[in-house]
Image (tube, helix red, strand yellow):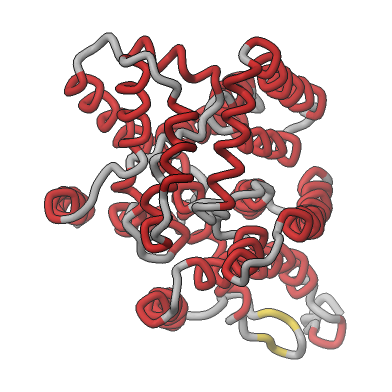
Length: 414
């Protein structure tokens, strides 16, 4: 059945690629390679296109033509430009498919023994539901699928054996393309021991790389920053987290958004950070199951990203699914005399309620004016279920401590 579902998923992706748009993010790199071959400035060309656009309906399409990666990536594109375009395209899409499979493999390793019985049946569908909401982001060809595949694969030896070296190297390399990925350095700090200094050193190295680009290529770096500015001002490409939704709403009203979104990020990231530190302390003191803490730590770390996009949520779809399953199970736990029932809710009841919770946001996307407010509700719901799933073990431990008035002592012992 799993093999059949996998074949059906591949066929569905292929059909979607043939009948609809595909590779709209990958086209950015292709156009940039062409510009570099012609000796043009890719940043200046993109900004010029944006200022030439007057039709508001074309804004989103034009915004995707912006090359928003730092100047350090341009030498790599010049090198790729020496090879045939078809070869580059084939290798890129093969790497993207491999990155997606690596993401699925790393997410599967977070499941416990019971969850591994049903999770394989859902893995083929994960690509179609980034963040548990239907979308065709997998066809975008965004580089993040490759980067997250490498990062999550490098994280597996870290959370299993405490070997985080490859994770730090992967995050540092990914930050060359996407600087906000440096927020992922909080993950080993939450899970591992004595990881603060290695994480801080890697973050410092990433910031030094950014500063070095401003020093080595000052003109290109200024154009890069201008490109980021245009991406928000014209393309309103804010993301789908609380910061992004606030920025989107202010932009739609024609209001300034810079200081407001900054304050929102500090408030939201600060709240999430305090929750993560609290549960991290409990996990270190063995008051919290490490298996329960692992997907929550990864999910919370991704929430620290100031601009959460669909391809970011695609990387944490499996952890979100595990958190939702565990949180719903905890919510449905029946209680007797104030103590949780050991066996918990039936699987049939859990499946029905879980399916309903999954269908509601996906049906809302059909009638909602945009995808982003629905996904924000899903993210906040998973965050709430994260807290519920982590406080559950303490309640269970207290519940298994049978009250004195319920203890029946055999007559022989009495």
